[in-house]
Image 1 (cartoon, rainbow, N blue to C red):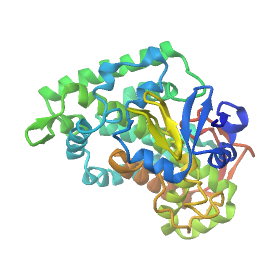
Image 2 (tube, rainbow, N blue to C red; image 1 turned 90 degrees about the vertical axis):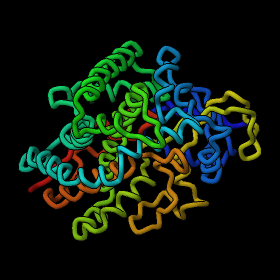
Image 3 (tube, rainbow, N blue to C red; image 1 turned 30 degrees about the vertical axis):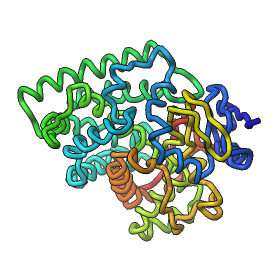
Length: 394
């Protein structure tokens, strides 16, 4: 009989790593309440699930949502919810527009935004990290990338937050509000798409419309699906990554001092935070047939959660995994997934985090948390500070 764990318990949401350790010790597969979904927590098993798209379908993302929010029509346009061979076609077309060069060219603008955000807090003594830094940076970057006007940024963030809340696993959120935000998003970007068809610009929507591989192009639904993916993943992952980094650094002042003295360590820092405090704690899969994991038989049609945060703290893969060590070899961490579904936005998230940390750590001295405890978001899906008051001097 597999073990059952309550992932909605307040102590788990504050610090999930003790229960993730129990999950790894108990069995290869466990039941996660209140969802009833099955969790897989050992590194080797998580990796096996991620690499087996034949038996573990990405349609699990839809299955993980409240029934009222499942929309087969929109899911059909999503690269995240697609499987081979269609996934390969979508990824080839999207990467034609969303290239490494596109991301690299964003660095000067990201650095400018980072300095503007720090300008607004420097000299204040205290600031609220999430409101002042981690929310605005990715929101502005993704909005500009998609050609969203500054006047719609508030809507942009609201749509993202509402849609992510539908996957929290411990609360369904306001279903009517999520549906309204989803409809607003598709209505707005449907209009943008039509405008860009008539009059292409230099933004990503225009590039996605024009992308072509072997005579194939993205359909309007597929363009909107990728814009939706980028809205959610591009905002939430980077917000979480930067917030988790500052929360962890203020728990380890000796590491903060070391990185401020040697900024070349920032890329190592980012990778260790991705492993140690993974922004996406899990992802969603749906079994397409009866399949065995670690000796446990999982029936067809079961929602399975590969627990990325657990795999990234597995003793068999990362020695002394609960120790924060920016000098460790983090190769193989699963924070951005693995294999064909490896996160397309990973280079952008890494770049934004690197630039923001370079600017903050060079301009803000004696960084400290005002409150001893971090207020974490009430989600088992995304690990991110909900509020984090900090103090610093210029």
